[in-house]
Length: 340
Image (cartoon, rainbow, N blue to C red; front, side, top):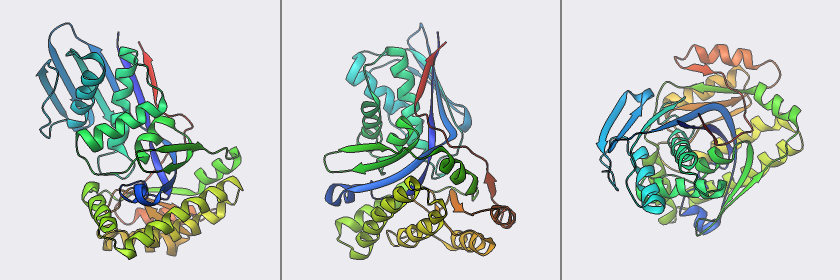
């Protein structure tokens, strides 16, 4: 038998960065995101021998290791090894023998939450195989602990919860790792309109988000008022975005995205750069009413809102800049697992 899972990547529409400690611990964070039809996949095939094989097909990486209670964290496929180590530590208490194959529809550092989504997908495959009694909040929180605590990777909390729950969610983050996921009942026609008008543009660059996030966290610890005020404004933006979606004021979303982008750049150095500014200005001149960088910033995907039929002119202008517009659909489904 084989055990499979997939978890969706996400677009962060508002509040991104307020889910990062210590801001969320001190002030409370709020994020609005929506999952899309780009996924992280994981497949587990149990083996009879005392071996572990891990293959990341999209990265052309493969490891074969002896089955043991704790695999070494050494920079080679550490996300998969981190999940395995926690599964053994918390559940099986003994080594497992298996082949794990993974694939992600977006490259690392793209700003769509690919690393955290992959952790959720791998966890889902283990949950399916071992029939672990874990609900959605349990899986998301465990994924967060693996990344942020076990592997010491800088980042926020929204990605793990978006990948696990799926759909359109307004998320609240508080001290002591308290997270509340509020699924939004947005009318289907407004979802279709948003999907029609949002343009997802890949800059053909990636970045190490942990460095930008580390600067952001340091700014809060050092009581940098400019950075903290920017995060307060982004939290306010998430409420504005929620109200616009629920009330069907979809064409306000461009303005709300622009509001957030102007404040996001003040959170930490490196979020924007001359290339990103050129892309943003090009989209605005072509008819977009607002946009943002996806994720921590510095590269990866950008998102633009272009109402009515203006998106075609925006796409034409963006295609001349060397990146590419990526097609997608929104998906209401989060982590999905099955057995073959």
